[in-house]
Image 1 (cartoon, rainbow, N blue to C red):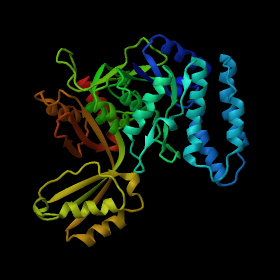
Image 2 (image 1 turned 180 degrees about the vertical axis):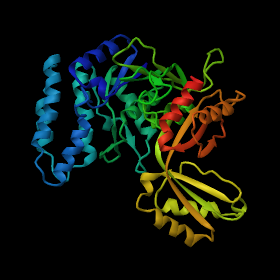
Image 3 (image 1 turned 90 degrees about the vertical axis):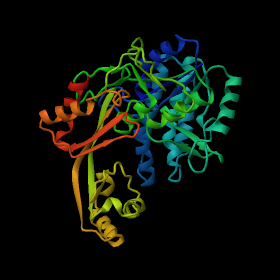
Image 4 (image 1 turned 30 degrees about the horizontal axis):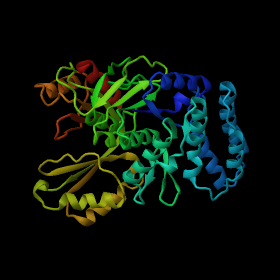
Length: 435
């Protein structure tokens, strides 16, 4: 059995629906289909989920949102008309809209993009529609209840051999709708694949797999044919966004491969994500390069800081109280630094410094903004002598100053900090050296 998920661009129009049907019907094993909400048809278009979020904002401020609903309704009706789908989706859409109030849950409202798209897709494919709220269950700590979800999903499959499930949401045990993070349809597919012990989890999108670098930075970067779960999580965490990083772990735990493919180029082999790559496969030293801009570095200066028990914990407590995530903690004898997203500390810097100084007796605190983090990820890094030397050499030759260096204990990644202005140049230089 194959669980197959289609992203928003794959279900953006009637023409895209046709491509989906060709893909699904080309392999009998594709029994479970997960659908995102209709995405953009062109660069100036709107994603339905964005319109639904906007509709909720209108409701909160008692602003008329009839025009937004008409746009949403017409998107669905246009697809229905072009495909000649036998489904009275208009009546349900009207009922949905008439029942909206200021008290309507935002999770319920925005989940309707996936709900109606999946209903339309199920009718077009002649598959059975199953509401995700009846299959994907959350505990009250917002974690997935895999036990209850597995029971419900297996029961659904026992009744219907072929089903379409909306992505992005599930429900608490009281039936209340709970949405996932944006991109959460990836997670829905991952949960279904795990619960059903699927042979493969396919994730169809608008790119032919995962690229070695961001094509907006590097011109025509190579595609990655095979990548491990751990490598992908590192790249996803540092900005690569082909698949949601939280969709990886449920499948990694049970060893189900993920395949990323392009709905518009279905014959392209895409990228296969696995636990381990066989030694026979020839690979580059570096699998992929990704990164993020706009970090701030808090550097704490204290004599013999590395030997002072509890010093780091006290500083970390301050950031925890402000719910600020720490990305990296470089340490030396008399200093340690905390790298944090700038957006999380804006307008709080002096307050945070004051809190730190109140907790510990230190010499100085320095804050530097404008840092970018670049991750060089590769399962072969640890076994390749001279990889770090080549990295530092190419950055030096391109006049790029390294502000920070960190390497994971599993040695599959090296993370460097550079100034924001050097971000693109650093990625291009690293790519040209290791591609």
